[in-house]
Image 1: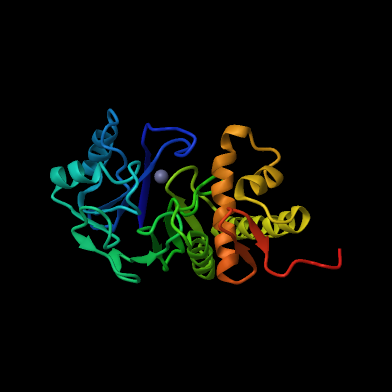
Image 2: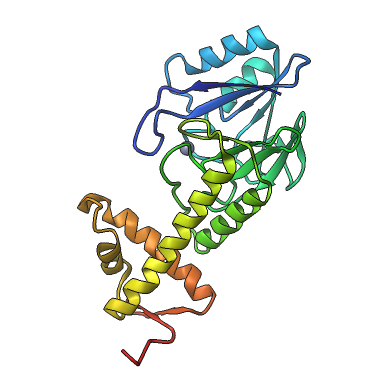
Length: 264
Ligand SMILES: [Zn+2]
């Protein structure tokens, strides 16, 4: 499987060096483009089209999720090439809805892996251990969770599922290509588990607390302007712990351990 990366010129705190657009070839001149990127970047679409012309013909455009740094250029790309837009059935504008485990393109199977968004997919080529993760797993740093309730539970389920595949190489939505997929997924899973434990520890130490208070207690090295995002992450942890009956929320916005340690 031929894979080439073209980085879109949209660097930023959330997009790292920019969106990774991938050209994937089947060896017979047919190409898929994964995550075309934004449609307002000078030269990016032209770069993708130019390289695609050298390699063959774009038959499929696959978008890993609906965010504006991944999806919009799919429209002009499909128009220019006659390719079909494939993605999760809820992806706006999708022409070929991809069910879980469906074949997306030449040996690439679709996995519904929610957590970053409710329409996030990964692409898995079992033959060579290749995994495209969109923004579920990034080349560096950590991924951002969906705002929806239950997102962290979805996210952990997705990580476990991908880890079970024992992928060799990860092609993320942003950041460098990951040479040791298992190590990266293990790091992600351990990081999330550690955060869960930190939330439990902070609740035990401080008693009933709001997500903002817990974020300030846990993320001591995070600048103040990033604490609201940290609080969002704490809230996702609390919701996951609530679903497994380990914490309880209240109308005042405070959360508490379900079985406080009365011995201390
Ligand atoms: Zn992204």
